[in-house]
Image 1 (cartoon, chains in turn red, yellow):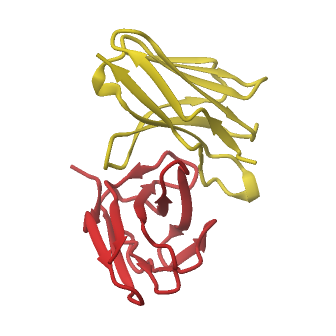
Image 2 (cartoon, chains in turn orange, cyan):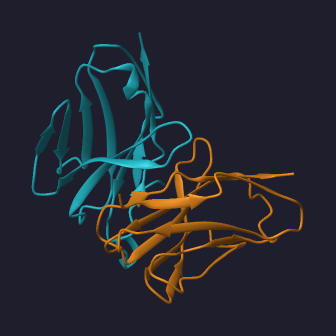
Amino acid sequence: DGGITQSPKYLFRKEGQNVTLSCEQNLNHDAMYWYRQDPGQGLRLIYYSQIVNDFQKGDIAEGYSVSREKKESFPLTVTSAQKNPTAFYLCASSPSLSEPQHFGDGTRLSIL
Amino acid sequence: GEDVEQSLFLSVREGDSSVINCTYTDSSSTYLYWYKQEPGAGLQLLTYIFSNMDMKQDQRLTVLLNKKDKHLSLRIADTQTGDSAIYFCAEPGLGGGSYIPTFGRGTSLIVHP
């Protein structure tokens, strides 16, 4: 079955450390997205990519970086510049920007 | 202010109907979505309605769209304990020239036995 796979499900980061969250899709979707979810705040867009080798900042891009070297993959790096990284991170994809998104099961990041 | 607004909580008894409401601001949206999120999981697309429709029914789900008031609702008939989840309304408006969906904060539906 096609879908989106996020790994790991749980991740712990030490102070000053960069960590990378994986997102892979086999839906042949062009567009991919990263969201951050905090309790009571809904989803906030970090970065999105409309097509391979292109990505755009979302509403809260500071302290994060992404790459889109392959259509199937859109990894998110949480850098040490992100001072409050503890959150639930969701990756999504869609055939194009204007179509409904399919979501992965998320990665929960915590600070040690 | 928010582009998409929802109440945060709804509590119903098992077997009753649930109605989750949403208001949005971008009248150019071609369609609007409802997503469901179970604990510790991602969002699952539940249903969507095109902006040229007033109502869409899919088994126990009924979506009503009032374009004049920019109001969207999701009705779940015969609500079951398995329907307990967070429900998000979203619109892929043209805000800022982008079709990136804007999500509400989500409504937590709690179903009591």
